[in-house]
Image 1: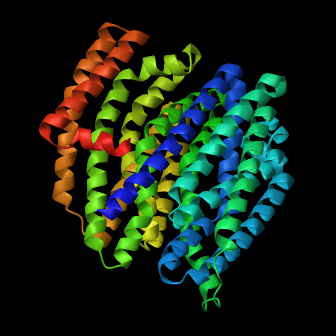
Image 2: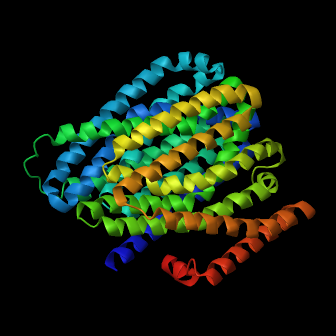
Image 3: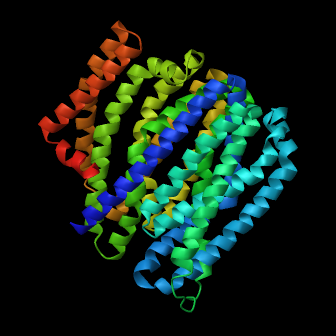
Length: 487
């Protein structure tokens, strides 16, 4: 019961942080779409996508490797914690400096390679963008390793909220794309300074050091290698499609594709919060010889995720067009076909958010890395084949196909570790599809007969009401208990 209460508190904290961060990020995306011309908007997010790929070289897998050992030694030998923090931080600062320097030197060549010469104006800012952004990521992951989910969520929310305020302010002052990037950078700098101070005062300075364990530094580096491969492949999945759209098509197409992805980012917020909270638990439960509890926690969270996100996927397919017009404006209707394809992607995302980092804490980073690299390379190949032929929809299709394969492989690996009840999970898939069909029929009917904002809102509320009623009547989820656990 204690672990349930603890996880519930941590989930509340992470969900609250995610809500603030996601609303801030979504508001920023929408406001920038309104304040900047579509071409400027597309150019901004093309630049950020390039930074996202280069950023992986500044992080490697150092933070996640440190988090794994922080979680382990917090239970067995706390005197090693200062050594883990010092080693990982020095490694991370070194990679940040090298990556930032190389980016400044290569800025013009990258712009020529991508085929957008104007990028050369913005890419030198990447040294600061990547540097402070990498420190924020390091802080968030290491605090997760300590089980400090609340503090980690505060850092995440503060970065996204400050980014919203600063980036929009600079754009309103007339600084355009440079102003938006400056807002991102200044926000990350403020959060980095505050977070590093907290980490130093609360952990590094207060915990008494023991003699460093033999080969500890080597093990941190070695475990970072498969995590680096995973991070590299993950960034390729998230960013390379956007860059290839900019290369084969134009910034306007990037803007449409970015709009579609932003909707997915917003919708997956609850399950991402749950996955972030639960990931360290599986490793600690298994290490203590209680794999059965870990398996039951995963099964329950995945079952609930399926019951929620399969109906969401069906609903997104129905309301894509009015949703895009409402959120981004009539100039972004080109994002509607992308969102139709992404209605499948959101379902697979809900599963991987509960699974992928859990494998790192279970010691299966190598297996996940192999799967991630394989599917990411396939994603690049499919993007190169499909984008020139069917445009941004081709990029979306490539993402869905490869993420489906990645999802199946991840569930298989975690099944090998925790011995899941696969028949139970398959039953929940069937229940979820039946729910989705029952809910989506009236929603789609209202949208088709009565197009517009008000009918869309009515249709969504009706869908939520039907889902809640069916879930409660069927006994699949105790809705009252679920709501009370959140408030």
